[in-house]
Amino acid sequence: MIEQRLFTIEQTETTSDDYYTPKWIFDTLGLHFDLDVASPPHATNVPCDRYFTQADDGLSQDWHGRVWMNPPFSNPTPWVKRFIAHANGVALLPTSNGKWFRNLWNEKIAWVALPYNLKFIAGDGRKLGTMPLPCWVVALGAENIDALHNFGTVR
Image (tube, rainbow, N blue to C red):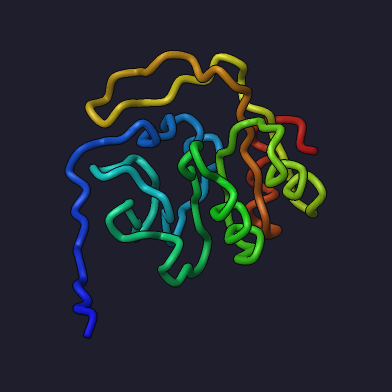
């Protein structure tokens, strides 16, 4: 008989995928979120009621209401698929030549390009270096899409 063990992972350290979205993005959106589905392990500046960290495995959880998603840039594919299926939220994503980006581009999703010099925030509040790839804020759902107009031109 094979013994099965359940392990609980507690994320106590940040990883290369743990970057906090700059507060000005949320200030510009002017939205409150029900859920941050891919939060770094420490307190976050996302205006939300609940959040999932890596330890919670946001992909295996039920998503509800308006979601915010700044997924692991090292593997955004499953997150983008889930975001499209959920169809109510806003996400921050990098430019990519991956299939997931082309699939997202072909969906009825609103897009806003972020400044080329976007800087993420570390868990301790430090500004990190400039993101090497252009990033986008994308939205699904009428109210979320309306909020993107606060940034300017929406595709």
